[in-house]
Structure formats: C-alpha cells, structure tokens
Length: 267
Image (cartoon, rainbow, N blue to C red; front, side):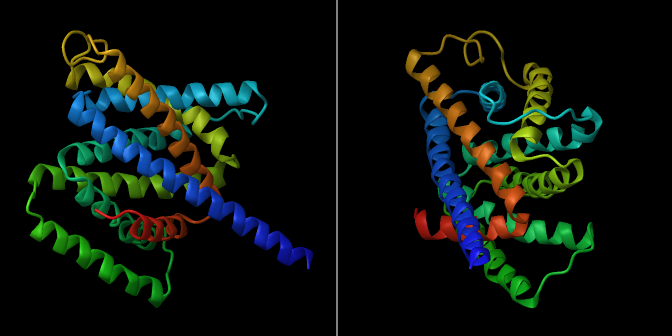
C-alpha cells in the first residue's frame, strides 16, 4: 500500500512539474515575441540576460540553503554549456523570424531527433509504438512548413538548428546528471555562468553593445522591465526543464510536453 502511495505521490510531483513548465514556457514564448516585435531587443543579448538572471536566481537559492553546490570539473560541462547557448539562441531566433504557430510546431520535431540521437549515438532501442508516433509528428511539421503562407527560409534554418541543438542538450543534461551524480540545481548552478561567459564574449561580434539597439543602449523603462521579467521566467523555465529531465527520460519529458502543448496551445 505504501509503495502504491509513493508511486502516486511521485507521479503527482512529475505532473505538477510538467504543468508548471508548460505555463512558464507559454509565458516566455509570448513575452519574448512581444519584446522582439515592440522593442526590437537583440536576440543574443536577451539570451545573455536570461543566463545571468538564472545564475543569480540559483545563487540566491543556494544562499537560502535550498540546495548545496557540488564541485564539478569545468571540462565535463564545456559541451553542455555550449549547447545551452545554441539551444536558447537558435530557438529565440526561430521565434523571432517565424510565426508563433510555426515556431511551436517545429519544436515538436525535438522528439524524433532525440530518439534518433539515442538510437544511433547511444545504441538505445524503442518500442514500435513509440516509433510509430514519430510518423504523424514528422508529417504534420512537413505539411505545415510546406503550406505555411508566411514561409520563411531563414526561419526554417533557425528552427532546424534549434531542434538539433535542443535535442542534443536534452540528452546531454540527463546524461550529465547521471554521470556526475548531481541534481538539477547543482548542474545548472555551474553551467549557467559558463554559458553566460561564452555569450559575453560572443555578443560584441554579432550585436551592438552600446548605443541604439545595444544591450546597454537607451532603452525605455518598460522595455527594461519586460526584459527583466523575461529573465525571471527564463530562470523558472530552465530550472523546471532540468528538474523534469532529472526525474524522467528525455523522450518521456518531450512526449508529455508535446501532449500538453498540443492540447493547450491553439493558434
């Protein structure tokens, strides 16, 4: 009886985590799109803000004894930190250059790509039922892209790169948590500042830093408040993603999130 109660409790925690991730993910999609359209805030600079706020949020959490940091070798996190940069930058570029509907549908391809990576790279096998679910997902994304009246080739390139890097990132997060024996907060606590440093070096080569359109440009108070709010929500998104992956497999997480997105988000 106790075992059944524990399973129900665990499933309830996972369901609550998925719903929370869904809500904050929907919020950040619309908020970031609003920031791009109405303020034109630069993409990589916004991503840098997200990373810095995420690290600051985790720093506050560890000071409040919510988790205990664990010493990790930076070399073990280098690829993960780099993929984190690509994951957020390319998905934000996809959101910036595509309609929200196309952006959301393209994200559905993450599940097939994760399965392909785990099959060919890690030698894992999946049931026929799981493999068959990939057919309608793939066909749906292809048909939407073909008949999209606002088809944007550059947007499709960003979406494809975003799906590829996101899939690698999702798989590596789970693998690193298992390999290093750390929880979601401990891993993100070390990875977020590494990703911030990488973007801090890259931003001046791709975007203005000072003056009009730069991260330290003359932005209005409302624009800065929206960017800060976006950073806080990004912290919640990043933390919930890590927690979900640490408590489920990447495929399970993506399948459940896909179901929630398709049932709750209509464009």
